[in-house]
Amino acid sequence: MSENFLARDADVLASSLTSTLRAWTGIISTPAASKPEISLELYEFESCPYCRLVREALTELDIDVIVYPCPKRGQRFRPKVVEMGGKAQFPFLVDPNTGEQMYESMDIVAYLFETYGQRDLPLKWRAGALQKISSIGSGIPRLGRGVTARPSKEPSALLELYSFEASPFARRVRELLCELELPYLLHNSGRTSLREWVPPFVRDALHIVPDSEIENRRELQRRAGRVSIPYLVDPNSGTELSESAEIRAYLLSTYALGD
Image 1 (cartoon, helix red, strand yellow):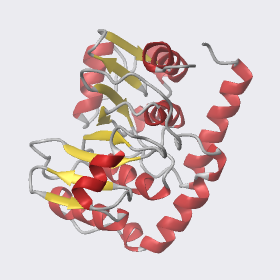
Image 2 (cartoon, rainbow, N blue to C red):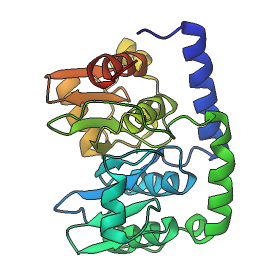
Image 3 (cartoon, rainbow, N blue to C red):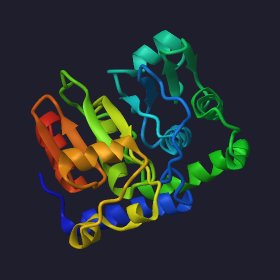
C-alpha cells in the first residue's frame, strides 16, 4: 500500500525534528581503530531512547551490527534476551568476539569506544544523564513509531540496511523493520567529508563521487552507482531498493501479515 504524499512528508519532517533535537548525533563517523571480526548483535527497539544512544555510537565508530528488533509484544527475539540476560531490558549487546553480554546504554557506549574505538570516551558521552534526557525528549515527535510488534513472516536470511542513525529517511525504514520484527545487518554509513553532505540528486547532477573513508559507502557506490541512504538489500528475493517510501512499501507487501 503506497503512502499518502502529505502523510509521508509530514512523517519525514517529524523524523527530521527528532534528529535535530539530538543535534544530529549519529551522522559523522570516525572509524574505530579495530573492527569486530564477528558481527556484534544488538537486541533493541527503534523508539527506545537508550537504544538510540547505542546506535548513535555505532555510527560514530563505523561499526556494523546485527539488529534483532524487540518491540513491545514481540515474541521473536524478546524471549531470547530474557534467556541470555535474565530480564527484558533494552538495549542488550552481545559481542561474540569477547563473550561480553551487557545491558545499560552508557556501559555499552563506553565498552564500544574502549574495545573497538581504542580512544578516550568523547566528552559528550561522559555526560550520560544529559544524553539520556536529550534522547528521551527527541523521541516525542515520532509518536510511538517503532514501538509495538506487528504480525510478519520471518525472512530466511538477514536483510541488510545501509543507514546512519541520524538519517530521518533511514529512521522510517528502521521503525518498520522493528515493528515487523525483521532482523537485519545494519551497515553503518556515516559521513566523513564535506562532499558527502551534498544531497544525492545534486551529486548525481554534478557528477560528484565523494571519496569516503567509510567502506560501506564505497561498497554502496560500487553496487548501486550512487550513495543514497537508506538502501535495503534483501537476499531472500534479490531485491535492492533505495528511497524510504519504496522500501517501506516493499517490506509491507513482502513480510507484513494482516495489513
